[in-house]
Image (cartoon, rainbow, N blue to C red):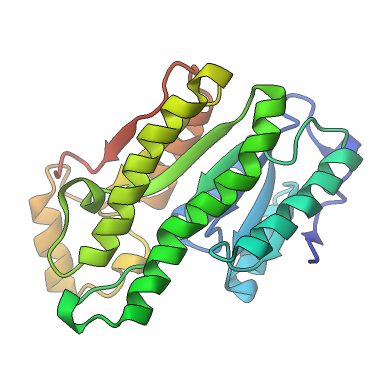
Length: 264
């Protein structure tokens, strides 16, 4: 695996106030890109991942243009072997940077949607959404946790959905994967609490990303009328909540925090 490097990554280029690595999956657009840009602005070394290499490199170049320090690795985090190789590469990079561990903060944001009646869904489509939305979270946590346990430090944030809380008609598979993430978060939060490693999830409502880009003007207006806040969230707002969770006390763990403008 090759990691594309920017901004002359070396120990001297990492700001002393942070010297922490944040891995963000699904970082090529939406919440993932907003989080990557925000964490970089705050001095974190950001590791960007997405399947779309071209879009991922656009994010990396945008961060580098602002003086941020980032690395990019295109690939599918639903593939366990890819994730394993990614963490081997990150371990080598952390050693070169004289950092304690390859990932201090893990933000599991990669995900896809599927809209349609369940009886019209093929087994292949079911397997794909489960692997990408839920399997990827297992893969990255499986590889990150041993390093975090050695230092008794680290943070895990899983990007979920309100549909994982209440379910959505014609989105049964998507709702199932997000409900799985919520249960996973609560359980893993309990498992890692004795080691001082918080695990939390953000259950997003309607966020103005490409995932909601298929809505017509009329559908969007109707949706916004249902939301007490009167609008969709901006991806930057979700990114800011990620940052707040990363800098909160470690006693906050195992929580699924609804971020929906009062919608659900």
